[in-house]
Length: 293
Image (cartoon, rainbow, N blue to C red; front, side):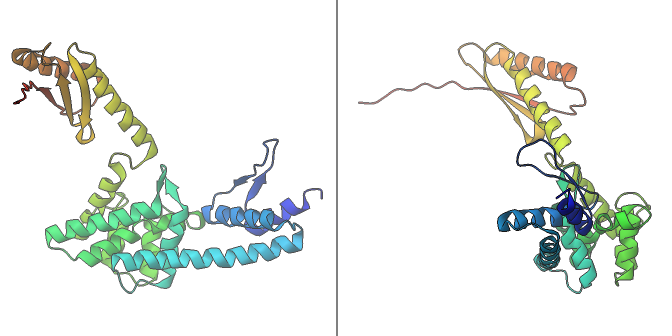
């Protein structure tokens, strides 16, 4: 009806809908991922129901908004309970739950925050710091991403302001501000969260571009090993820090194994940039089998 239903849906959900020639596809465009999720759920419900008109759209949007708000709150409560972190303000719990619909560098922010919380707890335990406080700062360190579209400043500074507003200690707020170098870490807790954030962000496979480069690097290392005569199979191990080369005992002697390991190491140095230290192990196995009758 001259786009009236689309305009109603866009106005109610706060997104733009792109309907082109692609069959059975509607593109939902918007800066707020929670609004995009609301629009997605609303469209799915309308398509399932079959009745599409402005009054029905308004009704479904309100219903989906209520369900989405409830699921965000439940998700935040689940995470806080899983970590064993008590007395977090309900508003902060909602922000934690809404991180489920946000991502950075293809890494889900809620999963990242949960991972940082666990790593921070482990580090705190090793250093004799308060484990629960470290987990608390870890799970809250990214909450600014849930509100940065509606506030000025970096997400770390905005997150710290909201944490302080809802009763978090200055130690936790400082850790939030300092986790991304917006402020220099000056406490053990801040350094713990800073380190945990780096570990979670840079581990192999954490972020999609990094994961692609990581897989290509392993493939390059294995192809270098396989390029030599007498090699049966090459395995890249320990995130590419070790290359294990299996050779044919009939073609490669013990002395040649030593030379082969050195040649492979030199080729890795030449052809794989920024490889760091890579241990090359050549495995030559001889088996003699006899049967007693």
